[in-house]
Every structure is written in structure tokens, then in C-alpha cells.
Image (cartoon, rainbow, N blue to C red; front, side, top):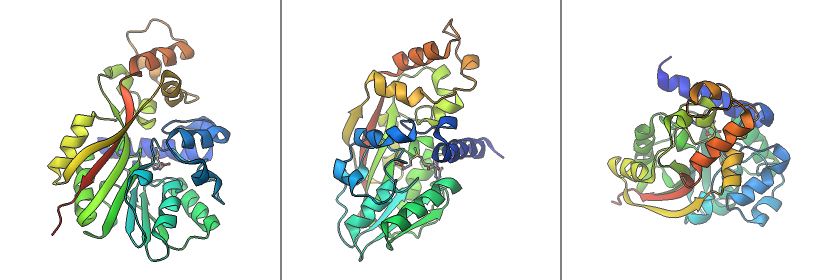
Length: 287
Ligand SMILES: C[S@@+](CC[C@H](N)C(=O)[O-])C[C@H]1O[C@@H](n2cnc3c(N)ncnc32)[C@H](O)[C@@H]1O
């Protein structure tokens, strides 16, 4: 197994645990399940998005934004969600595109896929499917997608250039993308190098500039940041409060105390103002 495969396996294990037993694992904005609907509100969803559900898809959401709300998805569109998790955005997208449209989710984590399929079944939706696969090698036909969305996933990829190329490949000519993701600046290496911090969507995150450059390099146009959500200290702390932060003591050299609460406090202090959620727009050149 090469290094990239090892990172994906670590991320998938974390999310498999997070969906089954949150206290053992964590995701972006990790919180106990019964507090998760407030996380969904924090990510920018309307209360009606959450209250209209027949499933607990909102409670199992690990997003950091609401890409669908800022997209122009309309009836009849084909929508692709990269890293669809437990399916909250898939369900909202399926309602938007209606019976004449189609929604496809791709995720690598078996437990997430099962949860998403269960949630979709409970919503009675027949225009959504979830495919198991990697966002670096999408199981999706070229030039087949009107709108590509993704919520807090690409930061987790160890091969972002491959993901950006795949976005360019699967979009139809003129097709559009709206992606919410965590971006960072000036984070110390000790904070980035920890596996758990990687899985909470911070360790693998790149800067806004790197993101925009990566999208342009893949051939996408009209690339822009459409929106930003800058986290307060309490929200950053929630990212790091993962129940366990294994191995953290070993990677922190500039902190004298080994007390977990203090470590999280120190990490939060370093991250405030340096970690935020951005919404990226891009479009594939038309014919
Ligand atoms: C932070 S969660 C976000 C899930 C969902 N988008 C949401 O808003 O709730 C990240 C998801 O991306 C998936 N994922 C991470 N890296 C992936 C990769 N390289 N290929 C496919 N899925 C990936 C994980 O399995 C997990 O379900």
C-alpha cells in the first residue's frame, strides 16, 4: 500500500467509525450525534431543509457549508456529489432536480454508503444512486454532469490534482461546480501532521490560492471563491474535540503540558483565523 492509499484508508476508517459511533471517530465539525442538527444549521442549511426530512440524514451530516444552496441546480439536471457521506446533500439535490433529474453520490466508505442508501430509501426517492469509488478516479461517465457539488471532502484527498482533473472530465461542456471545503493558512507542521487532525478536515487542507490554482490547472474556467465562513474559536475547538487525539503528544514539540484539554486549547489558538470554510465555483468550457 503506498502513502496515498494509507491516507485514504485512515480517512475511511475514521468516517466509518464516525457514522457508527461518533465518540470513537470524528469528521468535519465532529459532535455527538444528538447535537448534529445544530452543526447542519451552522453549515448554512435552512431549518426547513432539516425539518422536512423523514430520515436522520441531517444528523449524520459532516459538511462545512451548503454547496447546493449556492448552486444553480434546477429541475431535470444531473448532479454529482463527491464524498456524499450519509446523503444529506444528495437528498436535497434529488428534491431540487425532481423526477426528471438524476443525482449520483460517490463515496469510498462502505458504512457511509449503507447509511446514505438507508436515508434515501426513507425519503422515498428514486432519482438518486450512491456509487462506491474514489473521488480521484470517479466511477462516472465523462461529460455527463450538469452540476458537481462536494461538501468538506476534497481537503481529505492526498491527490487533489487528480480530483480536480476528474471534475473537469465528468462535467458536461458548460457544466458547473460548487464545492464547500475547508481551507487553511499558516498552520504549523505539528498540527497538520497528526492523523486525527487530518481526518477532521484540517490537516490535509490547502490554501484558497492553491485550491484556485489547482482548479485552473485542471482546465476549469471562471474559477472563484463565492463565499466564506470563518470559524470562531468555539467552532474550531469542536473540530478538534474528537474524544481521542491519538499520537498528538508525540507531534507537539512547542507545548510543555501534556494535558489533553490544554493541547486542544493550544491547537485552537493556532488555528483561529487560519482555518475557514470556502465555497469554490468553477465551470467547464462550453462547446
Ligand atoms: C467530512 S465527510 C463529508 C460527507 C458529506 N459530504 C457531508 O456533507 O456530510 C467526508 C466524506 O468523504 C468521503 N471521502 C473522503 N475521501 C474520499 C476519497 N478519496 N474518495 C471517496 N470518498 C472520500 C468519506 O468517506 C466521507 O464520507
